[in-house]
Every structure is written in C-alpha cells, then in structure tokens.
Image (cartoon, rainbow, N blue to C red; front, top):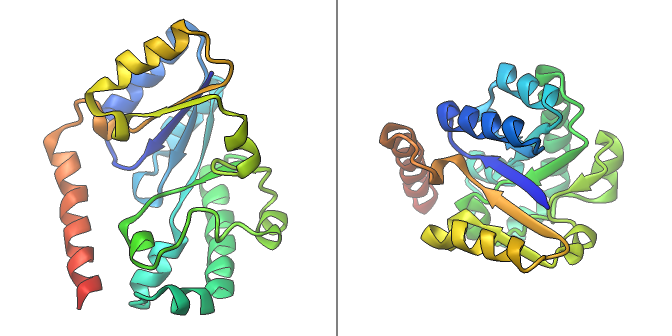
Length: 206
C-alpha cells in the first residue's frame, strides 16, 4: 500500500493528527508541500517518523499566472524558461527545508487547465538530472504498477468505504491519496484558498 498526502492548504492541525495515527500504526507516508503550505518543523517530524516530506510543485501555473499566459502554444514556447524556473525553485525548496526531495508531485492548479498543461510536461530528463529527482508521482512507470488508486477529492464521501473494500479484496498495489483539506478542515483555512483561487481566476480572464 502506498500512502500519499498532498498538502494544498495550511491546515497543520489535521495534518498532525494524521501523522500521529501513522506513527501509532507503524505506517509511513509521503507528504507533498507547496511553498504556501510549508511547515519545516512538521516536515522534520515526518522524516523522523520514517516518512517522506517533499515538493508539491506548481511552476507551470506560477509562471503562466505571472506572465498572463493563457494559451497552450504560448506556454510551450516558454517551456525551457519554466523548466529553469522549476530547477531554481526546487533547489531553493530543498535548501530551505533540509529534505532530500528525491520524489516530487505536480500540483493540479486550475491555470494548468487553462493552458492545457499535463502534470508531466515539465519533467524532462534535463530537469531530473539537474535536480537529482528519481521519481515524479505521475511517472508512467509508477502509475502502471498500481492496481488500484483511490483519491479523496474524487471519491468524496465514499473514500473510506472504497479504501476498506480495496484492502479487503487484497489489491496488490493500492495507492491512497488524501488531502487534509478534505478531512474536517477549518472553514477559514479552505476559504482562504478558495478566495485566492477566485482572485487568480478573475485575473486570468482579463
């Protein structure tokens, strides 16, 4: 079983409860943090508990938002600049957190949908070599090994029942993807993210 958490919002109360439960039952999990959800102390706790704390990157969205790029073709014409931007940000993230960051995961920002940028388009061999990345969470090789993948933001209220059912039927390679914001996160935390998303969405429509 593979446990993955994408930290899209800064709800560290829920996050810490999840970590405590993992420690109680001897589970280990990979946590992917964005720049705006960074919690270095908690990342060190995760690593100490045997888990992985790494980078939930969003350089395509950040670059396109900054330069007001709304076209797939224009985005592609800037791709080498975006890759260079990622390399700089990755090394800064690694230095800031003190974590090895051997694996990374793309954050699915709405700007990616506007420019029709898939999660893997940024991650070429030059980027991997420059950063020492051994795995992107959406690598085809990795995804093809999964016999079942359940994500809470897609399953809504059925996540727990479907996860239990997958375990009981003995799925050989099961991945459970969770987002703390889906688990009784305070309204103010989620609202902050939604307001930011609304503002950025309006800007991209101008």
